[in-house]
Image 1: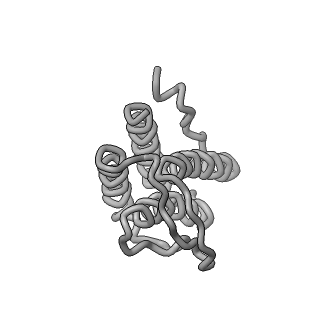
Image 2: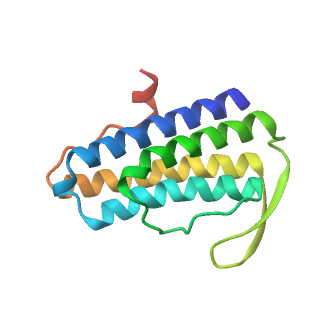
Length: 146
């Protein structure tokens, strides 16, 4: 199970990096919503890692300096992998969402959500890229595995 979760975070890291690169190369055509979504995608993974580790979290919709996005993506990846390797994935963690509501989930469920959430928002970003006259990036998992 841990190996597959590592694989999913490698996939997430790879296509987040590709999305950042593509946005950077076409920055003059990219709208604010695209910038907001790529930031939100990275912020969310940082937030889930922080909830698991009990660390300070980003704001959900904070806009980071564009030049820091690759480093945020890289740090998110390293922390997620460390959590997978060092934590009991069946352990449950109590946390608060951005509205202050308390929840409790397994570490596995929290990490899987982070992967799924990233995939969802990369799809939204691709729709925005296409609307702005750019070719979307093929980010499906199967393309990563080919």
